Image (tube, rainbow, N blue to C red):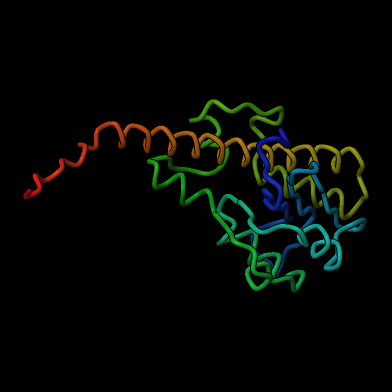
Length: 188
């Protein structure tokens, strides 16, 4: 899977206890990079320093709805402004929409026939697991949540790969259909 991730790129997804940064907490910041999956976990490894450390060699991040949710949530809760770090950000939700694919990430995965072990699990389930982790240090809940987050990140990479392939094929097709430029006769 890491072969889908170029050096300098990362697929980012967060898990939270709800939708409002004013009322809820981040439980996991997950990043898939060329060197593997990194899960920064609340109460363990999640800190401003660790976020900055894991992003230090990243030039571009990919998210799904991250421009409206993940990145602003991180900025508000952790005071880490990924946009101000000079990291390019491609939100795959908008890329999918331009390709006629609509819906949340899980719906896009189904449309693209991408599989996951945690099929049927939603953000609501993830929020509940996150609360169990934060309140009770429930290791089983944390394990499921980390696995769910990792699948989100890995499937982001697969979505991006499919979109790049479609774009490549469309460019090839466009070049085939483009008429060759005719040479104008020259005066001799």
